[in-house]
Length: 302
Length: 259
Image (tube, rainbow over the protein chains, first blue to last red):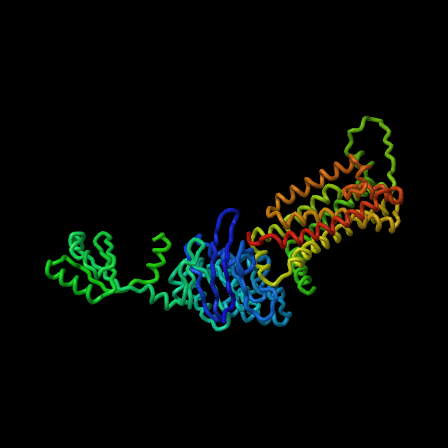
């Protein structure tokens, strides 16, 4: 069951094409990471889905029985949340709760629930103007949740936080998964890897890769051997470079990274050569490539 | 409706917390009542300041109560308008600039309510301040000179109130498509000055102009008679206020708020 389907979404700012036609569906009760480097167009995608900006072309379809204002079902946290600084945290939540159509009683109850969920109960009666950045971020998440949305959109929810705050937000996302779909943007792969079930990889306004986290990890997993030499690395690598078991060889000062599909064969070749020619080897490591290498490759333009 | 009231409540609370509900009425009171007071004490003031040649016989004509009341109202023509523009210039623009408008408008909030509640909150503040200020002027004029009939007071109050509403609605209207409060204040004041100038130069051809209401109201107080053109000018003003409000909502809806 999908929550929202996006088809052929394009967005131009003046003559600049920011989003160049993307399609994706978001499944129910999943955490989806929108991954991409700075300037890839992540914020534009999120703002378009939440209705803050209108797409140049394409459709965003929210799969819901009643055709009400989509804003009823979406909770949104901008990258830099701003509040009325003269209000207290509690007042702000009550205000947006009432605006979302909750009764006075429900808004009060929901406010208290959310304040304790994001760990802000103690600061609730202080003016928002006096809050720290992390507190504002947490209040921002609380306000996005006030009307129990089916889709929670978070723009860089952890990027501005210290390690502790980041931990808290990530744990919070894990908790929320049972109640709603979460779409969050980040430029940090490890954050995406940690909580998300699916990723959408946006680069230069186009989705270059997407899918379930575990599928992608498997897809980009390739056996890899790392060798470190004392000296004369070029000379020794030259001897084995032509072997067909190696798909690619990369030399970086006195370290060599060899990719292969046949780990056993590759290991044999290297160890034989090493003992026959008495290589000055200091390190031999077998591992596999990760998503991160794919991410870096794409961002650097291959 | 209930959402509109929640939005309005927030505006009112904000204006209480930033003390607008204290200083705006105060300024309106001071502006208006200083007129009867200084006019009453003018001979004494001149005497104490001195500078008159020795033996000069000073004969100051006592102004009529109507004259005094009318001049207190004209105080609002420049300073009153300036204050209205200053308190209205950022009513939407500032929230859009800071980004808080986006936080609110991703919630299921009606754009019409968002704009009209802000307009109404300024309207309330201005009319309340203007009423106490002008009532004070009427009272002091009565005590120090003579009481002008309350019906003249009320009619002139409503008549000139239309012009002040015109000014504030125009400023709100600019708010829906401009983002810089400074620019809004500049355009707003500039347009009002130009409008007033052109209207007074071509007062025959433009007798319906809202900018002439200030002149009409003076005439009305002095002669207790509706001057020609006053009614049509009020009708035009109210119609334009309605149109501006409608356009404000339409423009605001069309705008991309996040940008």
